[in-house]
Image (cartoon, rainbow, N blue to C red; front, side, top):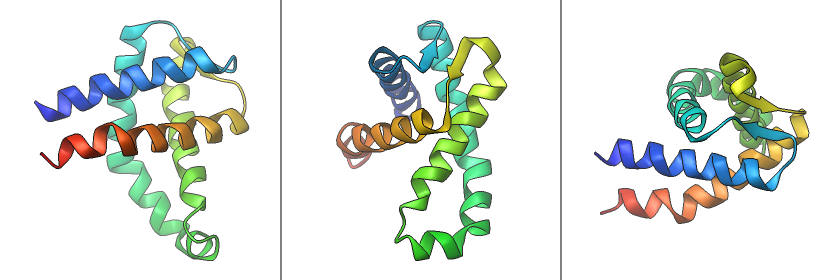
Length: 114
């Protein structure tokens, strides 16, 4: 149940970011929900592989490279979804990854402690 609530919250976060940035576009809430599911799959499968492969640069940047990895997973998700989810540029993806991390810290993470 928490997983489904987390997906819905992540979809709402994606919709909010799409509202804030012109280069971040979602075709609707259904697309945001599918993007949320795909993003959670990417974070479970692709992200650990990328973290291990880029461990030296992550340590060198004191963990800030993890935002780049999050941006890469966002771009991969947008690539899988086609025209329903579009991110124009890697800078927009990095800004979106930072915002998602900040919002999830205050919304999703406290929900998991209960």
